[in-house]
Structure formats: structure tokens, C-alpha cells
Amino acid sequence: MKNTFDFHFHLFFKHYMTEGFDQKDNVTTSGIAKILNEVMGGTFDSQSSPKQISESRLFVGVTSILSMEHAFVNRISKLAQTLPFRWSYVDKIKNGETSYYDDFIVQIEECLSAQAWVKGAPFNIDFLNRKDDAWKAKTLADIEADLIKAERRYFAFSIEGGHNLSNVPIHKNIPSLYPELQLRALQDRTDVDFISINLCHLSYIPEQPLGGFCQGLNKLTNLAFKSEDFCPKATLGITERGKKVIQQALTHQTKPVLIDVKHMSVYSRFHYYRIREKLITEFPEVSRLPVVTSHTGFCFRSLSEFITNKSFRSTTETSDGFTVTQIESENIRIGKTNDLINKGLFGNPWTINLFDEEITEIMRSNGMIGISLDQRILGAAGILPDSIRDPHFEGEIIAQPEWERMFRDGQLPTAERLLEGLAPSREERHAMILCLHLIHAVRVGYATLAWSGDSSPWDHLCIGSDFDGLINPINVVTNVTDVHTLRDHILQYLPQAEKTLPFYQDTKALKRLENGAIDRIYMEAVVDKFMFDNGVKFIARFLRNWS
Image 1 (cartoon, rainbow, N blue to C red):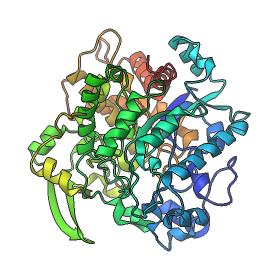
Image 2: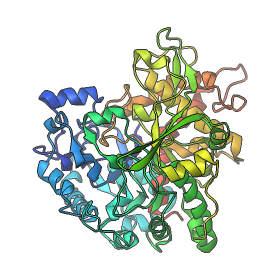
Image 3: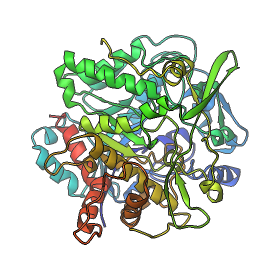
Image 4: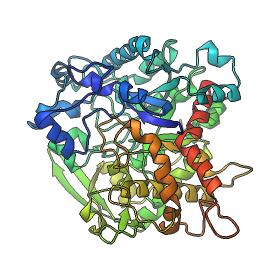
């Protein structure tokens, strides 16, 4: 049984936001709340609790810490009020009785205090820190060997959302002016270490806008949470405060923090790539720090073609006093199965997912792409009707300035000063879509970059499940205890994905033998890279401070 790596999951978040559940047990819903949980695809029950991890093959990974955003507590529906939330905590966020930064610090302290019991059996979890002498004295190869031993579980921390740096009361019209100082304080701490930070998350933070974010929640989410702050608003790319956070993150002398581009708007992501280029000219040591995205899917198209060909339609209206622009991207079929009822397979073209140029950007930087296990992100939209789609996908809101600059005028950010033939069942469709994402990323990598020796695009892909991040997991894995079974699903459907993906067809992701059959040994090796090996090597580089 193979071990697994996960670039993005939540260890204690659901325990922190709910009432009456011991951290050593799972969070579960009951009654009406259970019905809501089932309607939303298993969103609210535990998917990666310490107990589930102790029963899993997850041994190396990155666990994310975040404060609940005001948008989630602004207007909670009556149906969602049946959930076992810690309502005193909800009210504290809603009424601005704390800051995101103070709440984030509380969660750090809870994680550190939990280390006393998660270190023991059956959890055997250690939180990683570059300051620990045990790692500083070892070579990269020695660190990789220790991580592979599978005697203990090794997890790094990440910061999900720049809002966690805001040190003013939540949603009280008081600006948080120097978020880079809070980040520096976190980097200077010796008792905790962070591998990455998402500049943005799922909502507009009026007290501290750092950059444009992507709409990440679909219509189904309105069953539980409603807020105008889920809509991207007036930002155009990364703000001045956001640039300061980026510079602080990447230029800290001893504990730099990577920028995770997940959740940034597409304009802000391309803006960041240019900012990073400029920083490298001023701080050459930044060049060793890779670009990462921890839990994503793909748009299966290039941004330049998407913008040039206007592969979307737009509508603009005024809502609650501000202009809302929505785009509906054209649906494109990414593959097919032999299932006569559900034959066609589609991705999710929302701009929260990566365009082809970004796959190249990340691989060129020696970075990592964590592929989400959220069915919505990968593109699954239903069961029976999923093969029959309208010409355009469900609309997403784009901030008006970014729509004007990129989608209307076609301007990108400028440089900154600062197994074959088998038909998946309905449940297996999600595994097939995952395989199509893998094949697409590898083909883009081969088609756009030069590779030497044994290196390949397969070296830059891993799992980024987002378990316990309020997701709908893909059908073949419901929580962390099932993730190791993905290996067999991928091995079964990867050849069919190679056969049916209609993009970059002259570029092959898998090797074949002289008789034309798939090279099984090679395929197993690259799948093992995706499941575990790439993550181990990446975490080892982190522990050696990217040297």
C-alpha cells in the first residue's frame, strides 16, 4: 500500500468552527443539518480530521490555517443555522469583536498546544519547522529518506488568505495599513513555520484589499451563506499593500514564504508573475523560490486564445450600488467515456483554475501544482445531465476594472516596478476528469518547455485535496482515508485520458513500448510521483530553505 502527499488540507478548521466535537474525533452532522450536508455533497462532515488521518496513508503534507471570513457569517440561511457551528465564534466574527490576525494567532496556539497529543500514537504527527536542528544538519537526500520512512507523519503549515494578516476589527471600516508587518512577525517566530501564503481567499476584505480574487463559490453555496463580499469588486490586480506583502514574503532572510496563487483573480495572477520577475532583478535570491498553486484545476485553454477569441460572453449590471460584471465561458469538452448516458466530460472554465501559460510558468520556476479533489473545481456539474451542457458554463463575477482591462481590452499586466477503452461508471467519472487534468498539464509542460535528463512535467504535480475546506470531494474518495485508492483509479483511466484529451494531441504524456502498448512501469512511476514522491522532494527543499 503506497503512501500519499497532500499539498492542501485542513487539520483542525472544522473543529475550531463547530461546537461539541473533541479534536480526537470526527465532526459529523445530524438531523436537518445532515440533509444539508448531503445536498451539498458532504461539505460539512470531517474529511481530514486527526482521527481520519491516523487511519490513512497520508504521511507528508501541508495543512492550512485560516480565519473564517465575514462573508460566511454575514447572512447565514435558516437551513444552515442547523449546522453545529460554534455560534459564539460566528457572532464574534460577524460583530467585529476580533481581528483576523488575532483569530489566526489563537488558531496557531491551538495547533501548537495540540502537538502534545498528536505527536503520540495513533496520530504520530510532527509539525515541520526549518529552525529545527534535526533538519538543518541533514542533506537533502537524508531529509527525503526520513520523510519516506513512514514511521511518523510530517506536516508543514500554510496561511490561507492574506486577510489573516489584518490586525484591525473585522468589517469596521478601519484600514489595516501594514499587513507586511504581521507577516514579518509570523516569519520571525521560532515556534512555528509557514511554507506559503495565499494573497487572497474567497471574499473581498474591505479593511485590507491586497489584490483581486476569483469567485470561488457557486450558486449552491447560497443555500447556506450569502454576502456581497463573495463578489469580486473594484480591485485591478495587486494593490500596493499586496505588493509589500509579496516582497516581505519572498525576501525574508531566513524564512521566506512562497506565494500560493490559488484564489487570486486571473489578472492578479499574471500581475504577480510580472512582480516576481521584477523582484528577482532586485533580489536575485528570490529566483530560488518557486511559484506554487496548492489546490487547483485547469481551464484547458490558453489565456491568450481565450481573450483574443472572446471565448466568453459578458453581462454588466448594477447591484447594491456597485457594478457587477459576469462572464460565461464557453464549455469545451475535454474527454469522453463509453458510457452511453454520460459520455462527454467537461472541465470547469471558471478563471479560478489555471490557464495553459500558468502551467508553464509554475513548471519553469521548479514549482508545484496541487490538483484539487473538489468535484466542482475539476468540472463535474452533475450526474445524468453532466454530458449535456449549454454552450456556456455558469457565469462568474469579475471585478469591473479587471474585466475592462483584460476581458474587454485584452490587456495583460505589464512588468512591475517593484487503462484504454474502459468506460468509467458514474462514480468513476470524477477519476477520469482528474486523469484528464494530469494529462493536460504534462502535455502543456512538454509542449512549452525544454526538459533535460530524467526531468519531466510529471515532477511538478501532486494532490491538493482541500479536504475540510468546505468542499464536495470527488466521488471515488470521500475523505483522507480513501486517498491512497486513487492510485489504482488513476492507473486504470490515465491511458484513456491520454487517448481522448483533444488538446496538444501531438504531444504525449505517457511512454509506449515498441508494440504500441502503454509502458506500465513508467506509468506507475509517474503516478507514484503525483501521489507521494513529488511532495516529499518539495517538502525536503522547504526544510533546506530552498537551497
